Image (cartoon, rainbow, N blue to C red; front, side, top):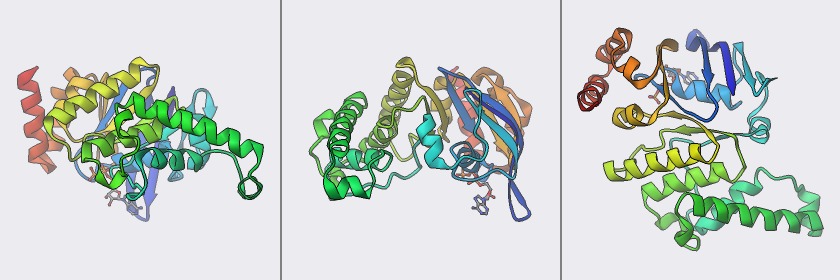
Length: 264
Ligand SMILES: Nc1ncnc2c1ncn2[C@@H]1O[C@H](COP(=O)(O)OP(=O)(O)OP(=O)(O)O)[C@@H](O)[C@H]1O
């Protein structure tokens, strides 16, 4: 679905991503892991058009999208969530979704000023899509709740709904289970599986090793901006380069890797 060849991003003298080639496979859960500062977020920013690569090529469904900006990537079907979801805390959950969706729809200022038919039609479609997305993520009952009052786990689900409301085919999830408890993590993993069952392709960055090891079909491991391994969870757990990378920089990470291994 997404073919990435020799992708590099430099910030001054630092190569945050260096010569990374990989494939995001359609209909699968693709994961990206790596110690802090490994280049994961930069990699996401490259594949959804937030950053332009210094060099390399990105092909999405056969089309070269290497230098397209984020709004065009969104229109082509790549949606993205962020580590922290910015919401209008005083607005309802449904209105947050509608605003998020409208930012990506086509009416211009003129349509808004004259209240055009196109605007009214778009509003209707937008409301329906927002409700469908809320239902999908299990938040239909919170439609009228003020966004500032919902829990961290519900914010995570709402971030998924925001991404889904634009009808993507590829969804990039940046730390989808950050800051939620173990039970809630299981629930979010279930929701990610449901996304894939409904025909979406998922690519996620996550530090929670247990979740990744039980969820991912394929894992790409970055360290210091470079691809050091790629494979199934079973292959990654036993890869000496991966173990070295976590031992060198992040003892908590390797503990989780070993714990996940022991449970497997
Ligand atoms: N806009 C930027 N300007 C300069 N350096 C940057 C920029 N964005 C990221 N970097 C640097 O690039 C490297 C990779 O950062 P990145 O945020 O992609 O890592 P990460 O793997 O997502 O880390 P974490 O797991 O801590 O979120 C880091 O050294 C970071 O300081």
